[in-house]
Length: 184
Length: 451
Ligand code: FES
Ligand SMILES: [Fe+2]
Picture 1 (cartoon, each protein chain N blue to C red):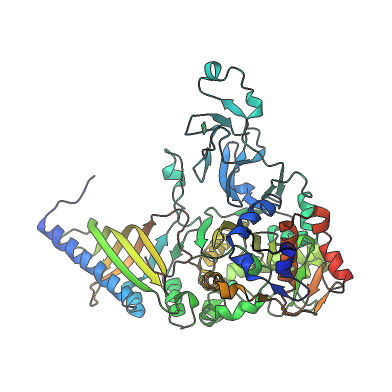
Picture 2: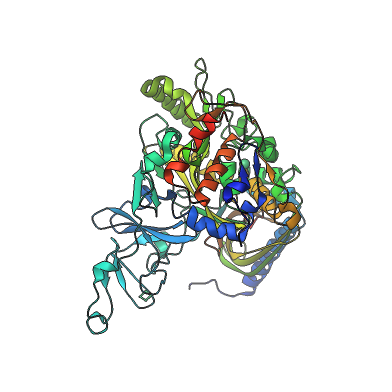
């Protein structure tokens, strides 16, 4: 497993990162999209591959679509994510007009690596689990559930960190939703 | 009890009057009837050969509501099998893709080869001393066609051969499958098939891809912000304006197929399309020039969108893809989209296209999200008893078609609902169990009637 030692500095850092992820969730759920964009690093990679049903022994090779090569749900840079926000804010993006009601639950947050060290970390990799609930118009309900691995960089902002990379494993094969207008 | 009335399905579709009954988009019985009448007869797209390049490769696909295995056997021959065990129907393969020498059924372990033959039955000698295994292979389609790498199949042994089935729509499918430099075939699938569920009847999207240019307005949000390959250079819109100056044509063909393509005016040269990416622009300019040399005047025709009856659509330019609208329920459609690129395109071209396709298409695509919303609520808004009393209007450009247009088929040079009128007429003929000859003479009859 090779995990970081569970020192008090580790737990303090872990709590800090969990708090950052909760803040981010609030920005999204509160529709503060431009503030959310500010939380994303200029060089962010937002990656949501697709998941296949494959035979045991072939998962490494076939289960997940490959970054930089295959089609995915998302392999976005900051420009593209900014376009997504701009589109929602046009007021004529019918898939989000009227707005959906969305709640992000993030949990199981754990620091996986901290550079240069847990005591003075400027880059951390954290894994977590999420449930994103979307209620749309009257009767539509979607649950997006999965795993995140985030890379965060310490910066001089109110939040104190920016998101450099997000790897999302969305636990669906055929997407059981008509759209992915929510950010995972 | 069917909703079709006494005079068959044709009573629900009036191509002369431009009227289509809403029940065909929401009714349970009609949906059930479609599975037999349409989806066991028509040619359906199932896979692309570049998804199964090696012997033993397989890709699990769908035909209508049923699962099929597209398998390349050990001799490299491609087969399409019903994914259902001959013993008790267990799905013999529950993987999306892979490579195997055989398919062993999880239930009682009957074992089938990659060529579909029944190879083994547990305790065969004791329990089935007289079993003739040659009589119990996986059920295979009677007709399969590998057309420029795209694999199609039909359950109807009497269906016309694939190219006859396409008729004059072939040219437009060619424009989609052929190289950007005009060379034949040579396209490949980018790995990763988008699969998702839309709460709509499958015919809404199929119809949309017949060339519903009238719905451009619903994409205003993405047009305002600009997401094309020249967006950073200030170009607004979903895609670049590469065919803005072209003569657009909407063409309907025998068999219910309909396309929207475009003709470049003879004096017009290459239209810059990738201004944010000079190297890619250069590549496409060269492709344009090669295509001109290779095809001459024929190079003026370029593809946009089309639907090949009943449920395979294409985007022929950007974002280039084949799309299947699988019937999943009367008000549920499972979409599979396969993205295409020229196999010999440079890596940076493929990379740019891959990223563009992703931000344009599918459930996370900024353009298509608004389509999904429309098809969802057009279906929802048609379900009630009062809604069903009021048929849809298909009277757009009713008398604006010609049979002597710039391309073959019945052609409109203005935005038109001619293609859906012909599509639903063919749909009704399938549903009423008409012969192939009858289905494939509807266009001639329409022409004879001055329609
Ligand atoms: S169902 Fe396949 S072996 Fe019995
Ligand atoms: Fe559209």
